[in-house]
Amino acid sequence: MKNVTDSFVSLGHWPSAGSFGGLWNFGKEWKNNLLSLSDLLDNRKQRILNTIRNSEELRGGAIEQLEKARSRLRKVETEAEQFRVNGYSEIEREKLNLINSTYKTLEQLENYKNETIQFEQQRAINQVRQRVFQQALRGALGTLNSCLNNELHLRTISANIGIIKKESW
Image (cartoon, rainbow, N blue to C red; front, side):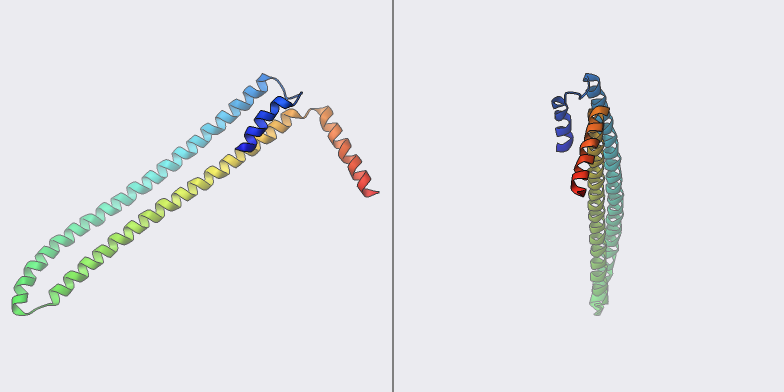
């Protein structure tokens, strides 16, 4: 971003930098690129929000399963009380296994949601970085191309040929 800003500011230091129209075109191109970047960010935001919604739906399903499990647990507890009188402890172990299994499932779903969100955020950041770099490069090339006229271009080529000739002797 600093290079693009420097390139834009440096237009004032070139005698053949062009007219205000060149700056206007440069500004319009920059605006269009920013709008394109904004669209990319909006799309990425929608994907992340959809991922969050999907994760929340999964979480809601897990909570529903937990409620069903709690309902079954209450039923099992009632039966356990009856069996406890008779000396059965198998129901207690089953109850604990059911609770532990449900909590592990919830924990796994929460971890999956967090990993998915982190992955999508990192991917969005990387794409934004790439787009900003590409836009900066395009802006710099556009600035350079608009600043070089034929005479300056030919003088640069001649100077480079002179340097090459001196180095080859």
